[in-house]
Length: 355
Image (tube, rainbow, N blue to C red):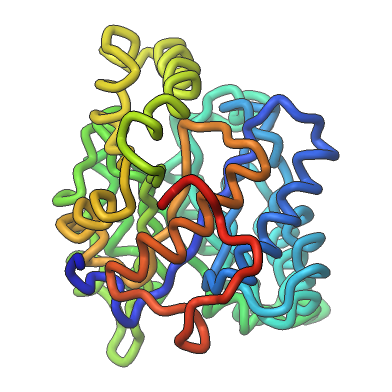
């Protein structure tokens, strides 16, 4: 058994909707996957935001999608990982978020960030060069609105009230080292959660060790009495063995290599798919091997919640369900995680192919 790095912590999943299915079918599958994850005992599920199918993703309006998910689930927490706040009106985000929080029974986890895609900033008429200042202004405005600040000369305030959502904001840091540390401190000072993306060689060389430094800075900046909330995302692919997992990852790896090459990420197209995956820090193979790797991950150790995801694979619905089940019943328990209620679910149709 691996070390209890997830003992007393939460387990979530980050959903990528990057298949070539229609938007309608992708959203239907998203709802089904959230329902399945809730049955498996996951504490949270998160969707990313990408405009105009950037990264081949379908989700441009994550709060709308999560509102649909909320009507089919009752316990699992619903997160945005992340909503690109500087491209939105923070007041409108607050209204939509507060409404979704009411609809879901107080389950929204509002993750916000600055977003890296130049095309989105151009389309929304924003200056990418000023995104760090725009980020600071937009998150400050979001805080004020959710805290009940007067919004006009009439003294009108947010409705529904946003106090609950205010306590569940998560700030994502920039991948640029010169900004990440200050942003981690700012998230802590605001009492928000800290949301960290995957640590890969293609993401500004952001290592698990570098993420642990950000977490330390964040914790040091927290106001007295505020509990830390730190979320990290890791890509995994549990299967019978490493070779079988690799065979299912190769096509997706090649697609991501092509995408990163178009973004100018040097070296991403000059390696084999397997080497790309290794440098991407995607852990694939047996559940035991994946758990051992996560147990030695400094970023995971510093977090209060782990999000698992399965890129660069683009699994079918059934395969996605198998992966969610394997992660929740074979990987996470080896790290000390227990689902809500303390017992693993007894599923009639256990996932095949990962044992």
